[in-house]
Amino acid sequence: DDQDDDDDQDDDDDDSDEERKEDADDEEAFVSALDDALLFVANGLATRRLAAPDDAGEPSRFDYAESAEALLVKHPGAQVADALDALSLNVGVPRDFTRGPADALRAHLADLSFALRQNTPPTAEV
Image (cartoon, rainbow, N blue to C red; front, side, top):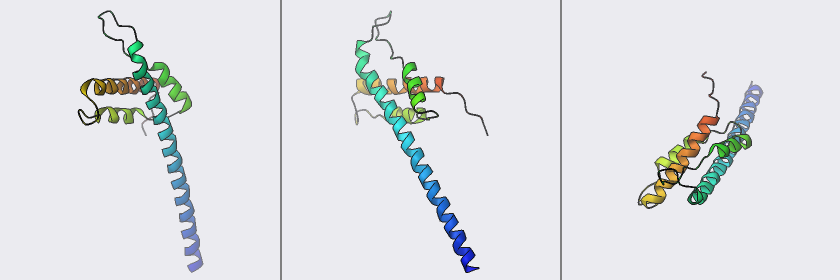
């Protein structure tokens, strides 16, 4: 009986190790996808000044549709929109930025989040 208990414990340890590895792999994939998403946002912020004004003379919004598509091709199933939303809600003024740059960052994060949600098929409810 003691031998059976030891074998059961070894099986539980193997399952725990596999679960930890899967969790680590999932976390690494998420971080990689989020990193790429933030690179798209940084690029959008850097190139926005070059965008042509709209009819009212306001700078046009950066179009993240292609960025979202590229992100989802590279990271299928990546769920980074919620993280982008959380970041946009937690950019503080004056702690992190002055109002103008904070508003720009929030807008770009929201634009990419929206584009990702538009390009992501709905998941089935279980």
